[in-house]
Length: 398
Image (cartoon, rainbow, N blue to C red; front, side, top):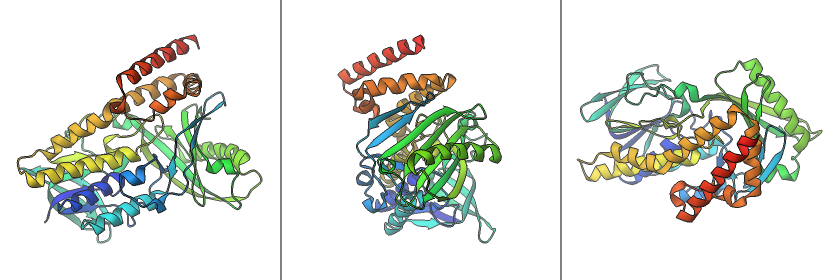
């Protein structure tokens, strides 16, 4: 059985950052990645916040476009635009692959074609079992610290302390086209991130998007629960036809299809079990209103690496406990509130118009909502509570 100090399951933004920074701190680190090529099968519009590359020390060459505007489309068909500084776009192949290469440079090991099957506790260590998809063998690794970061596909046994009964309620069927027009789209397409909120043909709420990339447009949608392939494709084809008419009318194009399950519920209540931690989307660190989770995922990896590195110097240090406390302090209040807000809006989608109109009327509100809660001053909190009261009154009138 292989023994390591730190075992990471999944090489997305959470797992990759954790591996890179732990290895840099002198921690023996192994990553298990189920795909043959890191990032190759990730379905994601891959929008990054301004300053992401600088925050996580990544080369700017991974950035495709840096549109300064986000456009929100409500049920009524109205379009509301807001400045966002720079909303960077990339692909998950480049993002995850770059982080993985940097982790290797720091001394981490990455085992691809390794499918996580489960873990058991053995005293102060954990034993992780995985399937080698090349040889078909079952293998085991013993580690002092483990980070589960395999995204929304995370399979946690019902009897595990990490189990979350409401997890399946937050799953979203995601389907995306990479659209390659024969000629470039109109200029505004590369200057704007688009988010669309509407009720689809199946009577379900839909969140759809258009994110510009270097050589294509990411056009996709997410629908709560599971939906058959035929209905899902019809929904996306209908959405694509509207986007094409606006942004690249009369232009021939080819598409590449992508699809999987994403997560859009509340964060997982518990994120540690002895020395086992869970991070990124697997921990439910996703903003339910936008589907954004890359910043949170990468930060969770950084927090895990910091805790594991601290434990290397102090044998009595509870890395998982420190990780859980730091993670919840950083994100849980905001993400839980965003989940409640999204649930409230989806009960009557006309409420999206009310919210978006208020954001357009009060640019300060839109700017504040792009920041983390712990950055707010007392005066800013008062302003936000006043805006919340105004929103409640306006909703009552609709």
